[in-house]
Length: 131
Image (cartoon, rainbow, N blue to C red; front, side, top):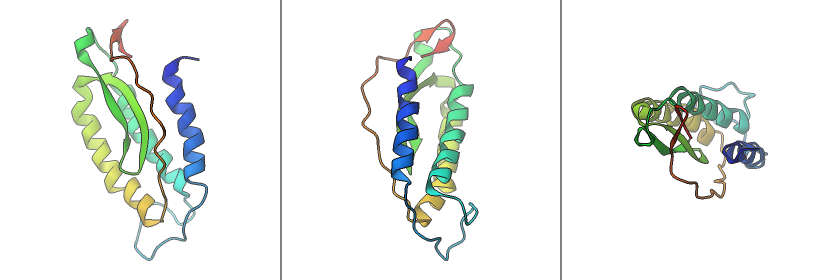
C-alpha cells in the first residue's frame, strides 16, 4: 500500500469514530435531510474537496506542485498534493463546504476529531502527476 492511501484509511476509521453519535436535529433549517448522519455530512464535504484535488494533479515540474490541507472547518484529513493552478478552485470549494456541510455538521451537534498527521516529503511532479 502506498503511503498516500494512509490518510484515506485513517479518514474512514476516524470519521466513523468521530461521528458515532449525533445530537437531535436543531430547529434551524439545514441543507441535509433529517436522517443524515454526522458521518454522511462529513463525507459529502470530503468528496467535494477530494474531487477538486483529483482534478488538479497535472504538472510538468516539481515547482508546479504543493502540499495543501485536505480538510474543512468541520474535518481534517491532513495534507494532499495538487498542482498550484488549482488553488482558486480549492479555496472556492473549501469555502462552500464550510458554508454548507460544515454548517449542517455543527448545527446537528456533531464533533470533529483531527487525526494525527505525519510529516510527508515535499510535493513533487512524478511522470506528470503531483505526488
